[in-house]
Amino acid sequence: EAGVTQFPSHSVIEKGQTVTLRCDPISGHDNLYWYRRVMGKEIKFLLHFVKESKQDESGMPNNRFLAERTGGTYSTLKVQPAELEDSGVYFCASSQDGWGGPADTQYFGPGTRLTVL
Amino acid sequence: AQSVAQPEDQVNVAEGNPLTVKCTYSVSGNPYLFWYVQYPNRGLQFLLKYITGDNLVKGSYGFEAEFNKSQTSFHLKKPSALVSDSALYFCAVRGSGSARQLTFGSGTQLTVLP
Image (cartoon, rainbow over all chains, first blue to last red; front, side):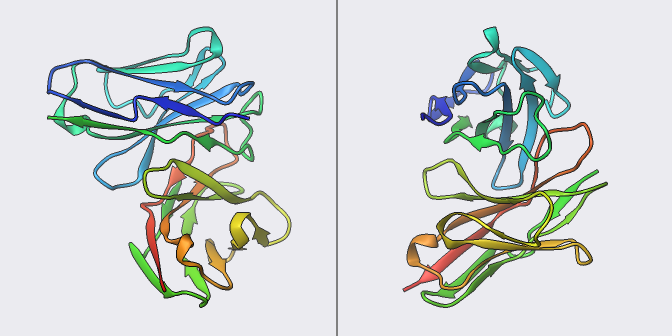
């Protein structure tokens, strides 16, 4: 079974540019999560999809971030325009449970390292 | 609000010795506790989780963790460390409320010395 995949693995852009990150969850997983780790600090939650619906986007830092999950399959996270403080590692995770119960295990992708210059 | 503390940024242990990576948590209601490991240039890999029941949870690669409700701790342990265990370890918690996101600690870098 293929794991969670993310593309690209690295992205270097200049301040003000736009970047789109992609996540492909494990096949059949209804729940998809985005997290990020900035400057070696804690991994912070960004948002949670159940199928194509945004269940919780309380962690999104501001309106420069836009996440979509078309058709309930893969998801994209767009940062527009990027700022210096957006640099970090963006992780995607998926889980199987239809309603994302608290005991449900999240499986993580390898992450995308974003550097904004 | 829920939180996780990993008090040690770095833990060094000699190969063959037991290892412990510490984690304490704060959450409303029943806690659901997880350990993940990140090897260099890899993603987070799930190690084990505590849901309910037995306080000693066994996971992948010979790791185990002990849940202690009175001390609100969930320390990761292994009886005999391997050099290949060297990695970054994250503890995470999720409460029993409606929110489904994990709250992570800041991570502990484990180095096993040959």
